[in-house]
Length: 639
Image 1: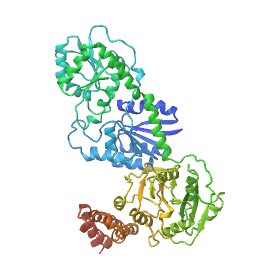
Image 2: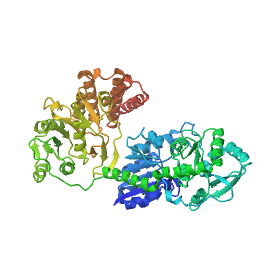
Image 3: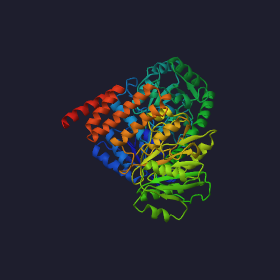
Image 4: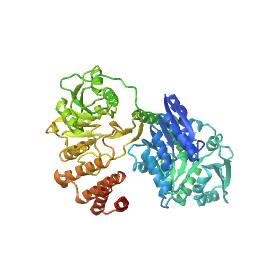
């Protein structure tokens, strides 16, 4: 049974009920035990709540966007995070055209979307906004229990035609925008009544208004005994994010609907089939009048509406929500695995290569992640770069064939070069001895490799895990396929882990530069990108462990090495042919600034002044200028 912590600002809110509350029973039946918690307003109370996230497999955050502190606590304690939203929370609702305040709207939304492992959006418009900050976005429409609306109650036999609108006091303003049309209808038809189901009301001069206080118990009857649904909306960037629940309610209650073709209204109300679209006041009058005068047309559209709304039933979307949550959690946590020994073929298809140094405990987990692969035609090759922690004894006691080589400590690059000479496979895939492969990683990489007509390199993204193997995030960088030299020059997209390449493209065994303590793989990928295409997979291929013993942590020495790799590639290895000079200057400025900042944090103020000055001169920008000034001041104080 999976455990899900559901966080929301208000469990009684209609949005929560429609997006998650109605699905809790389905989630439980499908093996997801959910606990709903209201997010408290006090900071200390929120911290205590967020701390409990460590006891759950995943946190499901409904609609609430996070401030920096809340995001920090969830990043610390949540093993995985799903963010679900059904409104344009990045914009003002009261004044949508006003530029959103970054601290109140844009930044919290960006922060929350980036932190989540997956974002569930209520419609495609919202999904496009989320995709700016997170590659893993899916659309799940808001749903309703259609059977509770199908009451088979005939409208009142009093000769009245009832127009109906349902909503809240905050959205009643949308109905008031078509008051002129309603007044005209009232003047033309004496038997027409407007029914408002809400917690607020208004009156009309020419038409009787039935004021029905909204309640969960009576809303379905109040809808089912009406004749025509109304769904007016102004067209702005906030209302385009609305998820059309009103239109779905009308359809479930077997009502033809006249709606503004804004956002999903244009999809949920099929023009001239389940209702009509109306934008101008004259169109509202025309379409409503046509339905008032034609009872057969109302009945025809009502039947079409009930058929169309079936795909939005909670039994359909509830199962889809379960699938989304289950697939995400299973991909984000260690699972029970069926371990199968590697192939003993003399010529395996894939050589899975592991360099290691004093990581016996992590190495066992890495090997288990390899044994759990769905693809079985592989060998495991391990080069032990001088371990003294009992790694060799552990390998000998594995009980299945592994190519193992021990050597005097010579560094990561030398260990990788030795792995290449020992590998017998057609393809080579590296995995570090503290990282974990996703169960289907090798299968997906081989499939992608063999789908190509020419030699290529396949790679994927990764989940971030802590020293205990708990996922706390996912790499959100946008991956690229094809000729990726420019993209790769700007940032490290490809890692030695979770990638695969044909052995034959490695012209010599010494492809990793042993003069580099770190970044020898980055150096190799940059060089290979000049001659080969890269194929990016759409799902992560490995889990990257972060701990104090990582070689690649951001130190001054490591940042300086990466900076030197970039300069050497650009000026000495052919990068100039592919990288525009302006791009190179911008990248060099960024790397000099990053390295200079590390120098500041380590008290190396002379080096910091030199690098940050170089950064500003290379590509003048405010960030570099600020850090350069800071380094100069600190250096003077030191003197």
